[in-house]
Length: 254
Length: 359
Image (tube, rainbow over all chains, first blue to last red):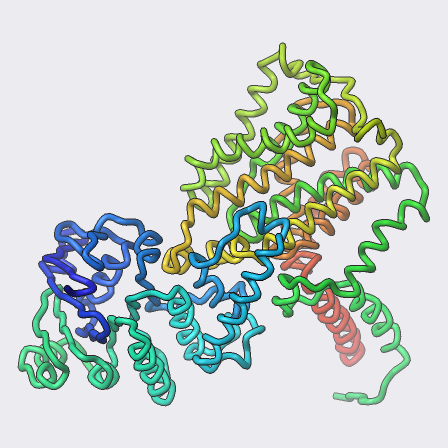
């Protein structure tokens, strides 16, 4: 059974159909690329999956459980991590604290026990710090673990956001335009990290404008245009699809 | 333009106070040290100063002011957890302070509770009230939350004025006994000083632990980006309530001490003006930093005491001073003092040079 199933989902904004009966399935351990020109409804689909918005009709299942009407934090707690199109690192914290925030659900400790800093909290925090540093090491950010997250360059902030999602130990990570605003070398580094995540057994859905990157890393690609699903299949097949070519040609003035 | 590279005599005058300041003032950019366990040397200086100052300077008026400043600092510390860390505004903390004070007043005068028990009961009552209020109103954001908490504070005042049998109406409750633990009564200003600052120290350590724990990170995440907080599974509503309840409990402690030390509780003390004063203490002192509210409360307590001499002029002067402080120390006095002062001194020196150059 597929890890994530989106079933006939529809979303309208003031009469404009952002998504029109979209269905897709994501298999465990794969990378699914979600492409399409501006306004195709990619981000809307992400908001619906992560629960930030509710669909007008249709259902979403994760691990066989319906998550359509759950709150965003409940969906995250089931094992869905995500990043944001406009990077949302927590700038008022250090880099390592950002990662440790990602571990929130795995750490214990209530108001009183944290305030009194009982010995077991100390032990747990130490382990958490160690693990967070390991994650940073893998992302290549360990050198700046103490600096405020807001001072990192954009590319590193994007990595940090992925690291924060990874720290939750999720089964599925949704990456919303991870390559936007990055330099070509940064994009290359990013693809490497994403492939590493896949090796760790994490399933990924990647929304991306950057066609080259998605074609390179994705196992399967879905193309949306004006809220409709116009093509689905392995990257090589989709690349040659006439509808896709047309959508991209008319969609972008560049 | 003439630029001199050599060291001038005048520079010593700048460097000496800056060096002294660097010993006591927290660094702003070292975010991690704020939330680390280790204590720095300057924190020992602070502790030493707090412990020794009243013994060296044994002026009762000073002691009394420091007792008040300590009580306000407890209140401001609690509010800074909510305002500075979780990023939510509350203009109703005077009400929780009042709930704390009235709980102590009623329990000790009507029911002859020992003050020590009443002290804990006050915090519990304030926290319970915060929980009940917080459930519905913490869904609001920004201005709406400010207005809702403001409304709550006004409702509290009306209730206090109207339930005369319990709270004594506008006259209030008199004759609250001194705070006492196991027969030891805190009946002089000096003893009260150590009582309030001792409580403040305890709550300060508690908050210091709290902000570097899972809960502290979660509340900072809520302040930075609620969407990001939700994306890692943080229950935003629950975190807000927890921090709100916590800060109300601090206010309850402060109110209880206030009632015992003033030996009276009346509605005038818990008005809207007081709520804004606490918010001012937190903002002036510096948000997102636990020393800020303490600095802020000492500063404002003194300022009000000094301005009290100028009678009707006190409010305009107070306003002007606040505006000037906010212009020159936009991050609060507790954060980046060193950097701001270097900038201001540098600006002043350059301005002098510029003026000379023009002549």
